[in-house]
Amino acid sequence: MSRTILITGATSGFGAAGVERFLADGWRVVATGRRADRLQALLDRHGGVRLHVAAFDIRDGAAMQAALDALPAGFAGIDVLVNNAGLALGTAFAQHADLAQWRQMIDTNITALATLTHALLPGLIERRGAIINISSVAGVYPYPGGNVYGGTKAFVSQFSLGLRSDLHGTGVRVTAIEPGMAETEFTLVRTSGDQAASDTLYTGAQPMTADDIAGVIHYVATLPPHLNINRLEIMPVTQSVAGFQVHRGG
Image (cartoon, rainbow, N blue to C red):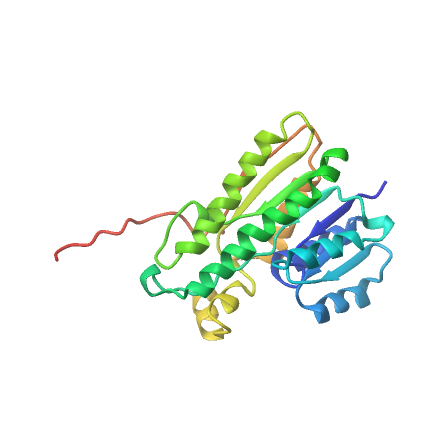
């Protein structure tokens, strides 16, 4: 029997690649995101037999719930939730950061993720499903300018472990995937569309791709039901964890 997966942030990056990967494998997919035009393009390409799209801002709890309530019967039973929607905004040090950007990251990466998870937990427990939360290496390793973004991703990873503990005995699997450098629209969003900054970051670095991470999500989702990966950190070979900051004098 075909299984159903709900993927947030499905209009670009890991989410869009995940939609393609799971549809190709015969799953039913619920794809959500803010950009209705991109979701419509997905629907035009794949049809509505195994794909359902829902356009809303994930920070809007009422719109989120309305979209869940409106799921057609064939898509209402969610077997796997992929909490992928999230963003980084700004690269400034904390003392120079824009508070509105901090709040948007918290509202998107933490509050919305927790709200959707809470709404779907009863069904996931009933179906002995899985939750896959997209975290980041930024939640483990600090770097200048990472401040609130890294803090939100640390929450995602710790929340995943907390869910795993609370859901013990239910059969629900919970995984935090923590990617490193991957070339998507991530840096364009973070820098308000600065293509040069994005090119500078990725050129020559052989970063991971959205398809790479979609493959990892698919791997986790299709593991035998008696296996759980708690945390999965993944980087391109060209990236590693190194370096401490040392300030000298003054």
